[in-house]
Length: 298
Ligand code: ATP
Image (cartoon, helix red, strand yellow):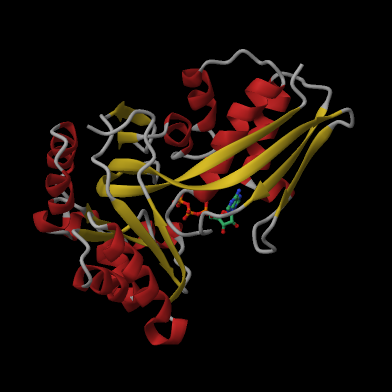
């Protein structure tokens, strides 16, 4: 029987993010094109005789225990299945935290998958996704992974073919943005049609295997809130676009910005430029990555 597991929990970016409306229950209805990237957290899960869940991360500002979404994921299955043994969960964070890359959600998704395997619970992927949405709207997608259209509050998922490959530069400015505050400030009704990205066009471009079609349609309605408040986000986008990016966009509710490059050398060069801009005050977290897909792109 399995006693120890090592898992990779991958981050995501949004190639497109639109908010359709605010529902009566306060949730926002979204339409998003989700894309997994290779940048990942590493999770080690170990079954213990001692009951209970213990979590530990390598970062002092990420909570341990109940405050950690991964802890809550383990707890959900432990309670449902009345498990008498315990689990130790060690998380090595590499995905920037509170950055619009679903770092907590992907850790929770990996722990759901890990608990299922470690304790032989026999749940299928769909059954794990149904449980995951109780903890967070992005968790079902983090279980699915790859390229997908996400609708509803994020839980209605349509798989797309793998997005065309490219080099992706991720840069998180040294600012904090609260997801809740961004959504609260967004006034969907007050926005003109140009603020809404062409999500269906983006899905069609992906189906056609056209990277140019994808980069022409990058759009995130939440930038209307974050860019006026945080000029750093606009500055990073400009630097990427001035140095060869085919397109650049804020991911999720930010503040991480990603740039899409065809040329690896240009992508490498922009990483150096970003790290040195303003003597490193603009951003210290810069990563070069690729799209993660379950199947190779055409
Ligand atoms: P999203 O894109 O889903 O809005 P995010 O990338 O903006 O997510 P996270 O990295 O998930 O944000 O972190 C949001 C907050 O959640 C953090 O400030 C942190 O305190 C808390 N948190 C709980 N569990 C985790 C975890 N496993 N990893 C990172 N943050 C976590």
